[in-house]
Every structure is written in structure tokens, then in C-alpha cells.
Length: 500
Image 1 (cartoon, helix red, strand yellow):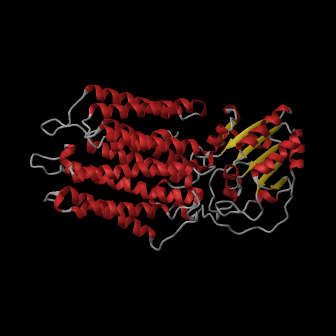
Image 2: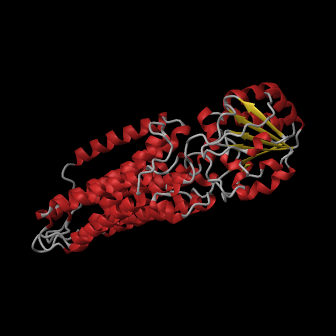
Image 3: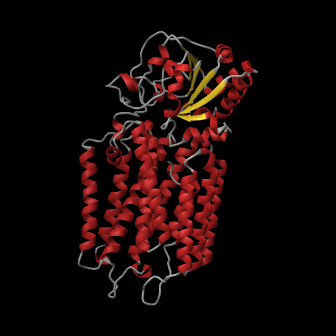
């Protein structure tokens, strides 16, 4: 399961803003256009096909194409079937935003995709807030008033929820971006009584939305109400994400993806736009399902994810206690010699490979080994990297064959028959403490059984690091383990020279 394509999420903000100026009949009701409804239905079907395509690496390109075509249909339909105050202003805005998105997509390194996705989520959230604000300031233009010109009660709830979820998505995504980009420490920031503070803020938001529904006077007489809801939502988005450590960021990214979808769906009801409701529901539900899957993979409680407290146990981003024990150093020559003699090798990539941008030289190493008659497989952990599917994306960029890439549950039993387990830039996902140490913050998380392989090679920069979760790894000190201490890309390049 995956979320909608990045291209869809980026265009989502534009679609949310585009439908902020719908056409209305003289009676104030939204004009019904059966062709528009049919076009939006087609777009929804394409979005579903996009999700289906993204369920497998082989069909992911087709999935992205379906998503882009669906978004194009939705945007064009909105422009053609709604009375736009100034079509040229809209087209200029689309050209500017599209150009910015095109440049970013061309220049962004695949290793920086997690923070890019977090940034896109923030745009979707802010778009929902802006549309809600526009509807609040001028509800008559959106056809959500009664005969007396008073904002409809049900529209108040939809507007409040859309603004609140959008604001949470925006501020939470900004914090996630800062953590992923290194502008902010990956360590959890634990505020005193944070759970009480979070619950109190959430209760205040829900209470104000309820009052927003029942307020007897015109809502324009109480402007503080809408803006207070929005301000508190911005605050709780910040409060929910700062306690979460960097190692838990894959779950954060999928969770924020879900929030962005629900924000857009809520605004879709306010605006009476089928495309927004369908697309928002798809993004929200797929993101929620993905978050649940990620939580299971990391032994986290789904409820604690939503509460924003699940980063306190792991993902500190700081060094934990280091075990001072003898370990065996290896070299590129040693690794190349032993791998040439092997029959089966399983490669486990991690975030260190992404940082070093070693995916291309790693694929070259795999090709050289296959020329020697060695069976090469790649093992991907569900939470390796900083976003769902991060390692899959990097290996696909390096043109690693899809049939050589396996998920944890499909390959874990093969380590006992493997000659070599080659670990490049990973630690927590191969740490047996997750199975043996009940006091460990990663206890219960499924990990690769690399220690069962005949020989284990670990590429890491130094022995001083203990992984993103702050837990040292017993495998470093096993008799069958060789530590290859170097930059991942440089080490693999040296191995390739000795293989050639």
C-alpha cells in the first residue's frame, strides 16, 4: 500500500485553490453540470488506478501516470465548468506554481525526497486553510448561506474541520521538513505535561467547532472564533510532531499524508466539489492504512501515532550507550575476495546509503558479482530510510531489477542459507536487540536476521555511532562480522575496483 504519487500531492494544493471560486445559479445554489460530474468521476477512477499501480514497483510508473492524468482532468474540468473572476490570473498562477514544481522535481536528489514530500504536505494543508478562510470571509460567493445570508451551520462544521486539519498538516509538515532536512535536531523535544497539553488543545478546538455550529449570531460578528480554531490547530500540529524522533519519520510522513487528504475532503464538502471529496478521501484513507502498516512494522501503537507521543521511546537521533568490545576490521579487498567466493549474497540498504548516494555504485557491485556467478538479492525493511518506500525509490533510480528486491517477510528466512549479508548504512533494522532486549526502545520491531549469515559485512562511517534509535548493535562484535569503516560510496567503489 502506498500514498498517492508525489505529483498528485503537489497538484493537490493547486486543485484545492482552484475550486475556491465555483459557479452558482441565481438562487445561490451551485450549478449542476453532469459532464463535470462525469469528468470528476473519471478522475476519481484514475486516482484509484494510481493507488493500485503504486502497490508494486513494476507498475509504479503507470500508477504515477494515472495520477497525473486524473489530476489534469480534475483541474481542467474545474476551469471549464466554473465562472472564474480572472482566468488569466489563474493561468498565470498555475504557470508560476507549475514552473516551481518542475524545477524542484528536476533538481531534487532522491535522497532528499522525504523532506520534499513533507514540504508538499504542508502546501496541501495551507491550501485547505486558505480556502476555508476565503469561504469564511465571503460565504455568499460559495453558496453556503441561507436566505438571510447567514453561514449554514453544517458548512461551519465542515469549514472548521477543514481549517483545523489543514493547519495541523501545515505546521506538522514544517516541523517534519526541518527535522528531515537537518535544520532541526532529530531528537524528541519533550515538553512537560505534553499529553495534557495536546489533549487540552484538541478539546478546545473541538469545543470551539461545536460552538461555531450553535453560535446564534452571524459568524461575522465573532471573527475571533474561526481564527482561534485555526491558531490552535497550527499550535497542535507543532506540538504533535516535535516529540517524535527522526527514526520514526517514515510513520510521520505517512500520517501527515493522511491528514492532508482529510483536510481537502472536508473542504470538498464545504465547496460541494466531488473531485476534492473523492481525492481527499483516497489520500486520507490510503495514508491512514499505510500509517497502520508502518506502525505494525515498527511495533508502535497507531493511537500513540495520532497522539504524537510515539517518538519518545525511540528515534532519539542521539548516541546511546556504546559497548566497548573488540571488533573485527575489514577492507575492500577482504570484502571483494569473500564475496567472489560466495554463492548467495543479500544486500540490506539503509539511510546511510541514501546519505552517501551510493545506490548507483551498489547496483554496479551487484552486476559485477552476478558476472562472477553469484546470486544477489536486496532486502528492504518497511521503515528503512526516512519515508515509506525510500529504499525502493533509490534502488529503482539505480535501475536495480525489481525481481531482485524483496520485503522483510519474503526474505528473512533466507539469511541462514546466505553466504554473505552485506549491510550498507543500516543499523536498527538489523539489530537483534529488537528480539532479545525487552528494555530496548526498538523491542518488538521485526528485523532482518543478518547474524545467521555465514559472513556479515557492515559499512558504516565509524564505530562511534549507534544508529538513529540510539541503540548499539551486538552484531558488530560477532566473530562472523567484518566492519568496513568508511563513507558508503567510497567503500563500495573500492570493492568494485577489486571485483573488476
